[in-house]
Figure 1 (cartoon, rainbow, N blue to C red):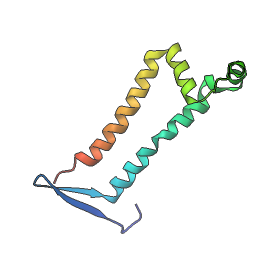
Figure 2 (tube, one colour):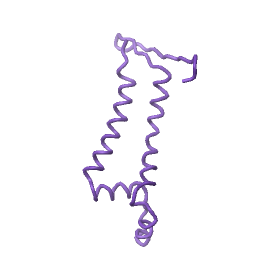
Figure 3 (cartoon, helix red, strand yellow):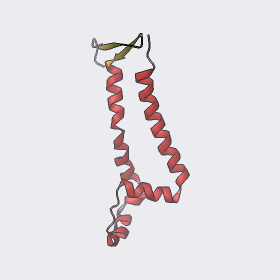
Length: 104
């Protein structure tokens, strides 16, 4: 945050005072942009390169992130599920820690 900007929103919930800082709110909004990970996954996957597009062209299939994810799940499913699960756990835990852990 820029210097000398310290906005704090204080609410009263169940008899306790809950404070949310502007920094916490902005960082949580930025975490919601994690959907860009799907776009990055689409660009780095071996299932969306030029050769894969050339092979799927006669079948009228789109080689997007959905196709890449399904193909990766078929080839090594436990690793893909583990990585996706860990990413969702990290995002959800960070949001929960920001908004539910600050009782004063």
